[in-house]
Image (cartoon, rainbow, N blue to C red; front, side, top):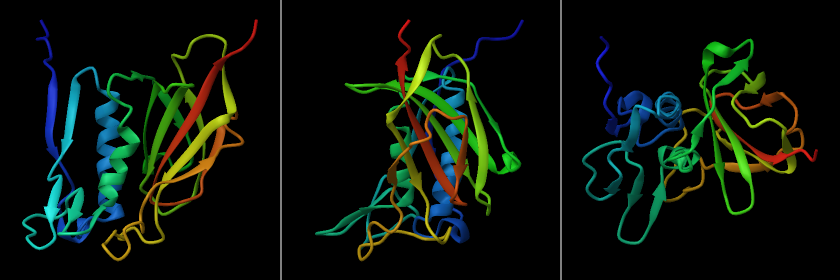
Amino acid sequence: MIPAVGKVFVSEYAVNEPKDAGQGSLLASLAEAALLTGLETNSDIVQMACYAPLFTNDNDRQWNPDAIVFNSWQQYGTPSYWMQTFFRESSGATIHPVQITSSYSDSLATSAITWNNTENSFLRVKIVNFGPHAVNLTIRATGLQAGTAVNTMASRLTVLTSSNVMDENSFSNPNNVVPIIRELPNASEETHALPNPYSLTSFDLALEQRQA
């Protein structure tokens, strides 16, 4: 008899290897994003996850990296902070199996959910590309309601990346590594491109029901 599996709270996670994390690098945030896609896919068991540490005073650093850095009059979010914004709608969302077909599948991590705002329902497919190549891929998600179509006008693409995988944010350049939101004119197609190596990409595909 297989014992029942309890609910899991991942109480602290972070990449803290100094040569990879620095004081909060893009590389660290991508590794953490890959972890979270796995936790999200198993959200029936993993109910919560918490990044740690959350805050650090730049005048009294005791740990690297942290999500938010501040002093007496400034603050900025590290790439790990911005990475977590890709997952803010995940709590209570519906998980969908997703199949990614690409010649670089071994360097990708992905998960998919559906979520709602006040105007639309969305299929959100998050893909971590932790390889050095731009990627063309095919996305297929299952479990959607029959007759569901993609509203191209309301769909968006969000990307977290930078020209150097070790790039960080700072007081002097707080927006060096932050998410960029773009329109997605080919949202209804299955084939998409990840033009940025070392990136976290979110496809927010707005869903609508076809008229009978």
